[in-house]
Structures are given as structure tokens and as C-alpha cells.
Image 1 (cartoon, rainbow, N blue to C red):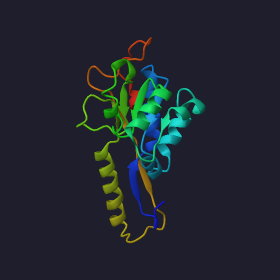
Image 2 (cartoon, one colour; image 1 turned 120 degrees about the horizontal axis):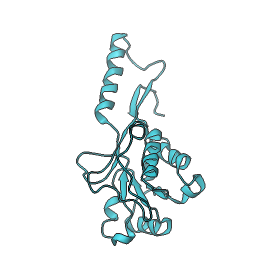
Image 3 (cartoon, rainbow, N blue to C red; image 1 turned 90 degrees about the vertical axis):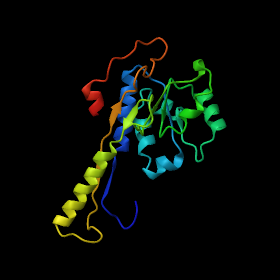
Length: 193
């Protein structure tokens, strides 16, 4: 943690990965692969990789081979991992790896989703980390601190985490893996968790 400790507001990354895995599992995917630069996962104290290993549909042993966390992402190393891991669907941390899938033949290109969904990035389902809600929570913390006439380094730093929501892609969406029926729209429980 940063020193001195200040109040913080951020997305609940551990829960966000759990939400993504549950939704992809509901859509029929079991071999979910996850890619992120190692530094991104380290900045959030390993929350994404820990949740990926903990909640993966195939268990933590199989999930370890479906995890790609390079220190410096490179296309050749990514393609090599993709060929070895053979994920049914790729979960990308911020759509950094997705463009490297596009030149591949369709039968060797898994569908993809992202953990940092943005309205500017159309056609890919993913987790909306709700930046407006993060901003509101930060403002709430600041106003409460001012109302209590608190100044300086807090005696007890608070961390507020906001859960994201899964947003399916616009049509055609993620195609189901071979041999699986297409899933319907996400139910509210899956969206909320």
C-alpha cells in the first residue's frame, strides 16, 4: 500500500473477475483464458489473478495454464500462449490483446470479452467498472471528511470498492462454444454479482 495511507475509492477487481467468470460460464464457456500485463495485476495486489484462479470453472490447477500475465506484452508470446492454452473465450484486461486476435483465421480465434468495458469500444461484452459511481463515491468520502472538519492524513484510511456490472455485447454477441446452445440474456442475479 502507498504510504502515507489515504482514503481510496476503486473498482472491486476481485468481485469483477468473479462476475465475468460467472457470466461466461453461464454462457457455456468453461476454458476461459485471461490476459493482462503483469504490472496491471500487481497494481491491484493480484486481485484479478487471485479471483481468476479461485473462481475459474475448471478449478485453480487448470486455470493456471489459462492465465497469461507477461511483464511486457508481446504479440508473438501471446499467440504462442493462445496456441498452447486453447481458451474457448479470451478475457482481456483492457482490450490490449484483443486486436492481436483479429488477423487469425476465424476457427483459431476465440471470442473475447473485457474487464474494462467502455462505451467507445463497441462489439465486445465486458465489465463496466462504473466510473461515474466511482466518482460519486469519492466525492461522498471527501464531503464527509469536510463535514467532520478532518484534515491531513487520516488516522484510519478507508477503502470504498464499487462493484461493476456485466454488459453483453450488442448483436451478434459472444457466440457459444462449439456444441453449446446460445444463452439468453443475463438474469439480474448474474448482472448484480
